[in-house]
Image (cartoon, rainbow, N blue to C red):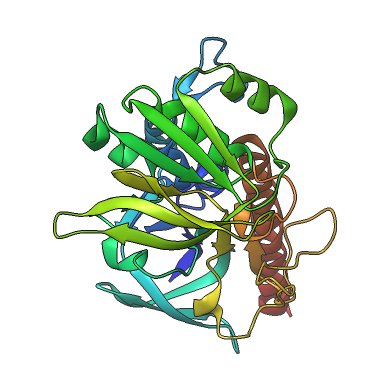
Length: 316
């Protein structure tokens, strides 16, 4: 039986692993299909403290993983299908690993990319539709690309894709962007970026080879048009990965885990949450790492209390 199992390996999960491993608790870290989380799909990380020249996202995550392993964290790959929190110890059913038993759980499963839900979209993932600019941008060298979204992530992807594309058109359904001013200024100064604001995506247009464009509706005139492009990158946000919890953990209306204010504690004693799976506001690598630290410290104190209680019972 493990003292602690961490589900997820983004900045939050890896930070929790570092702290729990340094406390000699030998945590097991379960990696899903995207080890390292969203930062493994990011290029230059400029706002993580300690790297004045920036650092590549995959490199940062790899360094954090190695640091956790150095102190004794164990990493195994699997997909958590379900968790039984009705009694202690907790039981996890993990595809490829079977049943695992643990005294505590740290949930750091993050959030997954949202799609537009329009015709031709999911059918063409890998054939011109993508949610990861750093993964697929190289394949569109010298071609025209569309990015859909209006937040920092969308503008970051648009700016990155100009390294490869001949032109990047940013499509957003409102006439104003949600992105920070510094990000807007940076992208607007890029001559390769064109703007298609106040337009609603209707359909990903394709032929036998792949994507050829995006059909949109001009919200001001009602007219429809097709914006030519060889690739459509969807950057409209994410949804929390909490479906496997089976209603045992309190969630908000959007599916994010609710924690006790100022802590990482969930409604189930011994279960803690950190990172984007419980963060509806900041969603930054540094805040995720900070919450991973909180979860580890909360978890460590919980285990200490269990051991004190067990010792007291044995003494009596």
